[in-house]
Image 1 (cartoon, helix red, strand yellow):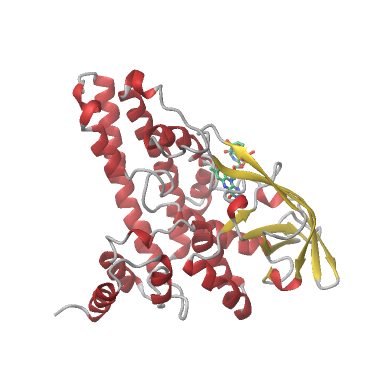
Image 2: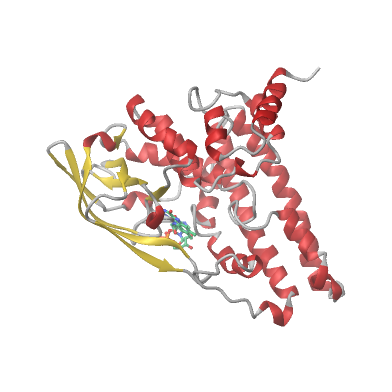
Length: 371
Ligand SMILES: Cc1cc2nc3c(=O)[nH]c(=O)nc-3n(C[C@H](O)[C@H](O)[C@H](O)COP(=O)(O)OP(=O)(O)OC[C@H]3O[C@@H](n4cnc5c(N)ncnc54)[C@H](O)[C@@H]3O)c2cc1C
C-alpha cells in the first residue's frame, strides 16, 4: 500500500500537473518544513517523500532564492505574526522579489564591522550610507537589510535587522557589470531613506543574531541544483558534457587531463554524498551540525564548480576562447558564462577562507581566531 503522504502528493500532482510556484507555495510543497500555514510542518521523512514525488517539477527551485532561502527563514525566526502575514505570502507565491543588503565596501567577511547608519526619527528609522554586491537589488521589491542603530561595547552590538521597501525614496542603485558581461549585483546607496518602525525585525540590536540565521540558511540553500550555487549545469550534466561530442573526439590521451577528469568525477560523488548527509541533518533538526557541514560542502562544491568548468573550457581548445558575453546574451553559452561566473563561487556567501575558519572552530573545536 502506498504511504498516505506519498498518495497525497500524487493526487495533488494529478490535479496540478504543471504547478506554478504559487500553486506549490499554496499547497505547502515549496517549503514543507516551514510551520503551518506557510508549510506543512513536515518532519524529515515527510520532506524526503515530497521531494521524491516532486522530483520532475521544475518550479520546485524557483528564481526567488533570496526571499525563500534567506528572508523567509529569518522572518520565521524573528518576525512578528503581522510581519509574517505581510511578507511570507509574496515570498511563497513569487510575486515579490527580494535582495540581501548586508555587505559594505569595508564589511564583507567581517560583516559585523558594518557602518550603514539608522537613526530613529518619530516612528521611523532614517537610513544613510552604502551597501555593495547587492544581488538583484535593481529588480527587487524588498530587501533584508542590516544597519547600525547604536554603538555598543562590541561591534556585534547595536546592529538591527530591517525589511526595506526597495521603492522607497532616497535609494539609488548602480549596476555593477561583471566579467561575464552580465549584471547580477549592484552598489546600493541610501540617502536619508525612511523605514517605518514596523519594518524592524525582532528587537533593536537583535540584528547580529538574526543575521546568523540568514547566513546559515543561505549556505544550506546554496547547495541545490546546478554547480554554480544551484544555477547552471548540474554535476551530472558537466560530466556527461565532458564525455560527449567534440569534447570527447580528441580522446582523453593526455595523462594530466585524464587525472583532472577522474578528480572531477570523484569530487562529484563526494559532494553528492556530503549533500545527502547535510540534508539528513537539516531535516532531522540538527541545524548546528547541518550548518557546519554546509561550510565543508561549500568549500568543496565551489572549487568543484571551478574545476569542472575549467576542464570544459580547456577541452574546447581554441573554440573555448571565442565565447562572448554581454548583458543581453547572458546565459547563451552556458559553458562560457559558467566558466567566468565560477570565479565568484569561492567569494560569495562567505569566502572559502571564512568557511574554513567556521569548520575549524565549530566542527574541530580549534581556538577561535583573534578578533
Ligand atoms: C556573486 C556574488 C554575489 C553576492 N551577493 C551578495 C548579496 O546579495 N548581498 C550581500 O550583502 N553581499 C553579497 N555578496 C558579497 C559577499 O558576501 C562578499 O563578497 C564576501 O562576504 C567577501 O567579502 P569581501 O568581498 O568584502 O572580501 P573581504 O572580506 O575583503 O576578503 C578579502 C580576502 O581576505 C580573506 N579574508 C577575510 N577575512 C579573513 C579571515 N578572517 N581569515 C582568513 N581570510 C580572510 C577573504 O577570504 C578574501 O580572500 C556577493 C558576492 C558575490 C561574489
